[in-house]
Image 1 (cartoon, rainbow, N blue to C red):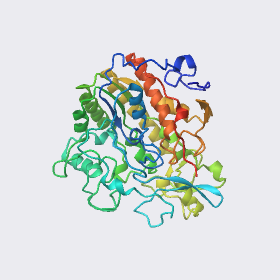
Image 2 (image 1 turned 135 degrees about the vertical axis):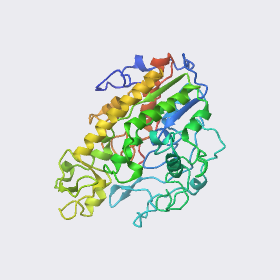
Image 3 (image 1 turned 180 degrees about the horizontal axis):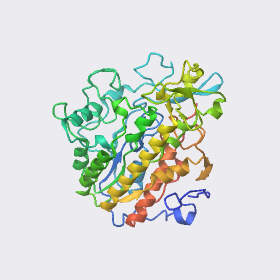
Image 4 (image 1 turned 135 degrees about the horizontal axis):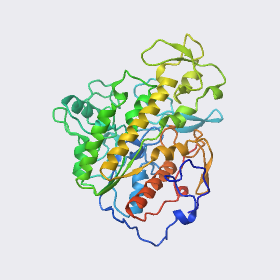
Length: 442
């Protein structure tokens, strides 16, 4: 494998740039060093589950090639995942319409104006997975650290409704059917019943992991940011820092019962992803009026420090935001004050992740710095492929502008393996990113 020289901010945590540093003898068997890979478990949210294009799908092994699955393959160990079939949950895709490529949003049961080409969930997704199967990938799309364990009955019921079922209003459920969970991505695990709920941490404990990777914390801030800093919706609140640390500690203490080794990843600055940097005032070339904040009546012109969400583009095309009388709703804008809140919050939880991992002698992957380099707006070359952060064309991100595509996940897998090798004396071989798929074009 050959890497072209990259311009990186911190060489200590990023992919190596020379053949001699990144290549292993192709005939050398994997060596775990001081780690025990015999029961490798991955913990995380949508990024760890293999989510891309705004959904969980597997037509071209998108979910099958999640980054922990790539790591497990290099470890030479079995790794069971709750794989969806075909379109899975439904997802965004590209279509060639009106002599140009357009993004078609996934089918949404809460809307009555879905595009005729919108992809809905595969029928098999209604009965997805077998809850009696033991899985190695325990990641759940939308999982927050605050959902990991409940310390009171209110939290327990809330977590059950989120992932287990019992949604009181059909409009809240993922498929608008009352009784279904708000999120379908944890249905491969048994969360008990609303009268006797089972915490996520119980599944972690029962896994008896000997080694783990953990990338949690993203959704503790991403839901709030993706909703334009919405303080109203309970599902998108920022997890209080004290609660974050207490529950992250509880998770690592549970893992410590059986796992002698593991890697905890920090949270990247999500505001640097294409989702927040594609619809800009420079690109639009016009003034955009916005409603500032979730709890104010302030209407003003957007400034360059405000981040217009990718989802705002369709509203702007319809005329929203072009006049003071019809501003973009606050859910479509992360205003400059909210951007600072997100950045400061990420720095705060990363400090807690580091401290928690260090106390328990687990390794740390500085995903914050790695993704900052990916998002630096500079073109870089990896395995002979040029990448940028440009929406759709860039090569790292999927169509949703938030999650990586499979090539991006392969890069992330290599970052984990570099830390594993350095921390535990293993010799895991990095994968050739060019062997994995990028975005599927029409």
